[in-house]
Image (cartoon, rainbow, N blue to C red; front, side, top):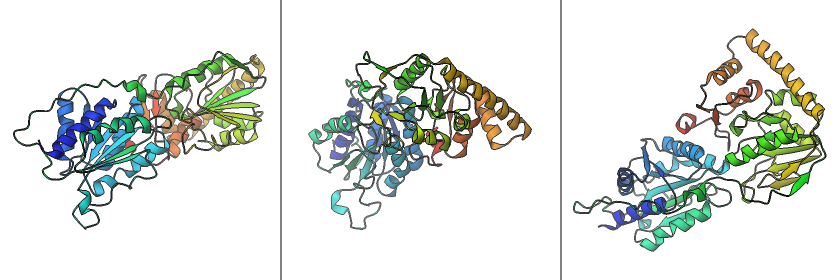
Length: 412
């Protein structure tokens, strides 16, 4: 067995052992050994394999799968400018804390900076947007490859994000004709290590909040945290202003048009934000005026915390057990304003025909239960936030890390 085949199979086995169950491949000559190893793993039923010709598309597809599964997804590309095409998806994965494992094939280190075909300095390309970089040399040992599992675990703990594994390949790259068929071992690694779940804290300790409160819930990859927030808001009698990718629009306390009504209502004394918020200026204004802003951000131990998380009175990676005596008049005030706004919005949309806002609301209202909706940045997501009513049955995704307008179709 040649060295490139040995390393390719070892890299795939290490990914599988680290809990990776989905791999996206963009074909290329230098990455052929890695692609063949991935195909063998797919045929063995160990991974789900997706093939995309365009590397930029492959990157965003891996991003979308990782968003939905909440587990790390690997993407394999060949050397040179093929690697550079992953950059937009890598940047989004960094800022939205989505775990991607970038496997980039490379020529041997000896030909770097020599003008060789399809050869650039790939190693630092994704800095500072990756959690770790590993450059496997041509003569890498099995121990070097096996250490990748520890690298993946370390990089994906805390604030998750992409990691880059650069694999130098020398000729011959593909398996020899007499090589045995490779059968990868099923994982013995607990994939749940990488699932984005709430940290464990002693929530039996009740914290009394003697204030009129509000929850603002934004983009958050932690479904458990969203569920906790919905239950707590109902118990406290606090209204919820939601951004579409928060996926809390089915909660009992979710307002239909929170961003539209909040400027005309008294400023809440206590505001809890969940995830990354700030889609509307009106909600950002509340955070500047409130007496107390508690930001719940379950990746708060890592870098690149977004505003307004950084400006909060306190940043926590779990939702405390807040208790309070509900004030019915406070909730009634918000609900009454919300009902009035609903009537005004409905009349305005009907009067002006098929505007972009009306189209967004029509789509929102008619998506069948159980379907998913991927919303683009800028006006599409804002139209839904401002004008679409709360509803059940639909899951929303969006690239809210950088709010870029590119890669949406591939992410979906």
